[in-house]
Length: 438
Image 1 (cartoon, rainbow, N blue to C red):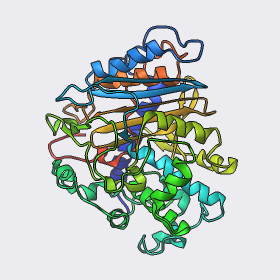
Image 2: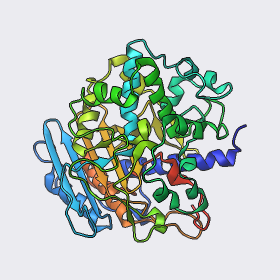
Image 3: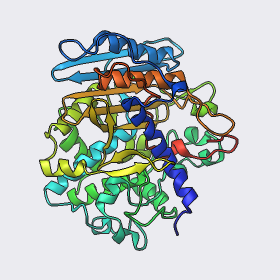
Image 4: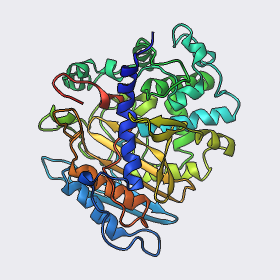
C-alpha cells in the first residue's frame, strides 16, 4: 500500500519546505517582510574571522527571543567561539562557549561515514538489498527492493517511526514527550514502528526523510562488524576525527559536563516552554542521539571534507545527491549520503541540521573544508501560525539567518536572509495537529 499523493506531499513539506529556508537565507533570497540585514562592519579580519560582527550577530539571536545559543566559526587556522543569553531561564546562569548539546539529526552524518568506511573495506555494498545484511527487519519484498544507498539518501520510501513512538503528538497533545522521558526503546522496536506504516512510494522513486532509515543503517553496521553500532561510530569516526566532547549517551539521561537547559515550546502548546535537557535518547539511536559541541562539529565536518575520514571514492559517493523539491516543484536542497548541499553566495555548502525536544543545531562547511560554522540553541518551536496554517515570520528566525550568513559567507555584505536554518528534515515538526493548523 502506498500513500496518496497529498499525503506524500505533506510529509515532504516538513522537510523540503523548511529546507528551502536554508537555501533562501544563505543565497540571500528573502521575502521583504521577513528580511533582516546582515550585521554591519567589515566582511572579515586578516585571519578571515570578524569576531566583533559574529558576537553581535549571535547576541541578536538572544535579543530576538531565543534563551541561549553557542557557536563556533573556523576559517583555516583561525577560530572563534561564542555564546549568548542564558543556559537556565530560572537561575539566569549564562551560556558559555563549549557547552555540550544534543545535536539530533547531525548524528546521521556520523552514521553515514561509518557505513561508507565499511563500504570502502568491502563489507557493505551500497546498491545491495538491505535484506542481505539484516534479513527480516523489513517485511515482505521491501527488504529486497530497498538498498543501503536508499537508506542513506532517504529514497527508501520507508515511513518514519517518530509519530508512532510519540503517539499523542498526532492528536495535538505533547503528553508523550513527558510520558516517555525515561523510556528505553530498542532499535528493533523503532524499525518495527516505521516498517509497520504504509510504504510512502516505490523504493528509489522519490524522497522522504525518515529516521527509520538511519536506525536500520545502525543495524547494518551491527551485522557486518559484529559490534554495537554506536561503539563502531565512536571508534571509527568520533575518535578518528579527534573529537573530545562527542558521545552516544545510551540510556544515560543527563548530559555530562557543562550544558544548557533545553526548552520546548511546541508552537505554543507548551507554555511556558518546558526543559527537556534530561532525556532517554534511545529513541534517536544512530539516527539522532549524539551529544556534541559546536567546536567538535566544526572539527568533524572539516576532517570529513578534507578527506581525513573517507577515501576519495567514498567521499564522492557521499556527495552524490538527489534533489529535494518544495511544494512548488523547485529544488529546495540536494541530499547526499548523510549530508545535504545548498548553494550560497560563497559557493556550495554542505552539512546537516538537527532537532530534539528543546535543542536545535546547524553545522555547515564549505566544499573544500576550509571554513565551517556550527551553532546550537536551547529554545525550540517558538514559531506561530496564522489562521491559514502559514508560519508567521519571527524575529529570531531572521536573526539566526543573519548569523548563519555572517558565519559562512563573511564577504556577502548586503545579503538579506529570510530566516534561520531550521532543522530541515525532522518528521515530528511536520505532524498535523488538531486545533493547530500547519
